[in-house]
Length: 590
Image (tube, rainbow, N blue to C red):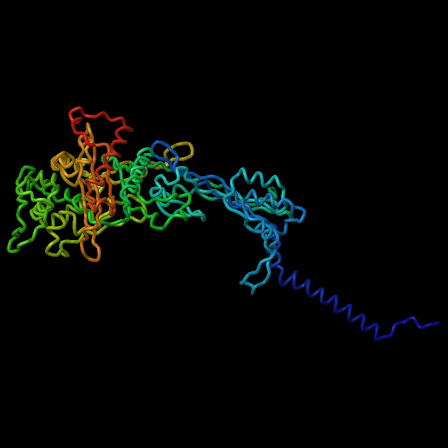
């Protein structure tokens, strides 16, 4: 009988091999279950955990009549999980690429991109569970995609900002970028009210990455944003932007700014610039088109500034409208100093203060400034709002430049009254003219009327707010009569006349400083005025930067900005249904 026993060597060899195997497995289990238990428990929990964020719907922006200016619509970001995609759906990819308007090759690469690399772990391969195919897919297209029933292709609903009127009031509204961040305008200014509060929920998901609602542990509902009602009137805003387009077509200026407001309340009815942009396509516009020129662009106001020294002198009682000012002299004796006065475009001789404003005399304005004195001239300039922001609330507003009298040179006292040696924004000029239209009281300019919830209930009202009295009512009334004569047959703004209405205003034509010198070829033409002169309903300011005139003519404020004022005012008159004054019907302008 053969010996059936195995040799001791083979027995121990087998025993040791089995022992090592079990020890290795036991050690590995001990490593995983004891020393690495926290790590792998967390990985397992995260694999099951499902965190879903619920985006709050951003509130709407409407005009003063409730017309929609900005809203939020639901869109879908469509993507694919390459690990869930199966080859049986290969034939459906062509239909998918057509629905998404994507190249078929890109779709094929996306569904097969199962692994990627990460520099964090030294170029280690990691599984890819989401490849974005397209953002902003509308709900109807997404429903058609779901009908294809392609495994692994799904979408995440998101909110997208939409501006239904395209470029209307673009600089007022601003825009929200793709990351959901407001970047300018009301979108940024009122973001606290508009943004709402995002919600979220935590639950578990199954092996197919679908939520299991029965295992929800935390759930916070989102709260939609509030809605904002602006003082802007869509009809007036549209009229202003149409006139800006005509200005651009006719004169090809570097830029145009127009502001319309109610002088009694300070509410801005329209604010527009040219060139402009479409907030829906903000990333396609040149960067310069995005700036709100009414608040950012500085220029010397020229003759529109003359209302400050004249208004101040009338308020101080140092001169009356009928007093004579000698505009024939070129020098002015101030104590021991002889000051050189600026020149006028035409010899005017001895004229009344009323005519100084009517004819826009530089020499006359300079002498009024000298009578007022440096300190009072500076103080009234500040009181009218120059050298400081108007605080309308939009980001990017500049305060301009108004030097303290301690820093004036020998010419400033005679040049500041005619609108030189000071830098302003169109909004500052507009607010200063509104003071005269409102009997000497400055109102805070505002774009917001109220914030309201989804039921229409007002949450935050924004009521008209007076800032200060700048000049008394008598002085404002006297200056008003002078500004009415400016927009008359003997004034510098005949082109702003409106049949049947008394119009008050002031032109401005400023030479721009090029290479340190005043240029005769580069000008800013402007007009700021209001109507009707008694109980005005609107103040309109038009500023045109470097209009290109035919035959080398000068782009005066009266010839460039005045007609635009008249056209906008005419459309407001028709819109409001204001009846003309029969006594003024003889004032007809072609």
